[in-house]
Length: 93
Length: 382
Image (cartoon, rainbow over all chains, first blue to last red; front, side, top):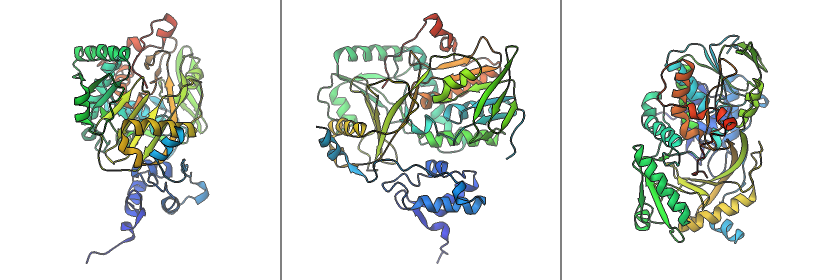
């Protein structure tokens, strides 16, 4: 049986991004969570990073040696929960 | 990374245009190129853009920039060695007014004369391309199969990484505060991390083009306009091309990943750097989408955002040097089309800076055209 490492752990369940992928882009020089979000799509799915955002910031801190409060935090954008197009369209009728 | 004190070229702006310019300079052998970005890579207009790529334009210059860029996009992954998320499903342009359709037919004739194989198509043909399309109210359609969309993030990161491999140094969270000009020549830039001596500065500052031009004492009539966009949850592919209409005022596309991305132009054209989102946009965009592609009523909107179109008075960019200052160049004012024009812009700007022969003549894109009243107004903008 293949050994399971924490690289295989899925950190962004919306976009299927693993911890290994996050570590790979950090090694390539993407140490800003804003850039990590945009290159891996982690945090761009329906939950908008409610799980992965903190994990990614913690991983950047661990690898770069920066303090958590020194690391920029990506913006949460509206809507806070996904809304159906039909419902929005009816609202505007 | 130690901060630089001297450079051969300083590129201001870490968006797709700045990264393309820096990459192309290094590719042509220019050493010691520095990119300065006041936030993160793609933080300005690039990372907020609608991702479209097209050659269906209404002016010769934009057609040439569009098709030349498509030709580069088609081989860019090989060239840069990284994915760029290109999807060539065409642009399906929808006219809702006879006068608009007449203009689109003229555009197609112009495009065809420049080797762009766009065509006028019927409602039935449009329905063949997008079976779920509601064609009610539409009076005509045009289509070009090499148009499409790409991933602005991946493309910019690909340019940036390829540039770094060639020795370009990119400093993020580094803001340019001033540009030093002496005796009509660029001497250097002042940043919040110190000064850099350089004989060449390229203004690729997107939304802040006017402010960065003013640092060198150059006045340009660009201004930033807020444009909103939204993205849905991903679903199986149901719409291949980019759908766009100038009177309908929308663009709607399904990315390879399955999400729909869309936007429309603002009614008020106030000058602003604001990039906040509005509820009005969310409702109006949902109404446009569900009318055009009725099955999308069951799709959920995941996120909305806004970004800046850096506009010029004729919606065509300013690309070139300036008469007053040796060593000062601009690639700005793309009016919402910087991503799709970035490949050829990087090539042309690098050729200009290095005094090489240009692939396309760009005299018409001089900032002096506004003073001279030689505007080349683009009719096809959302």
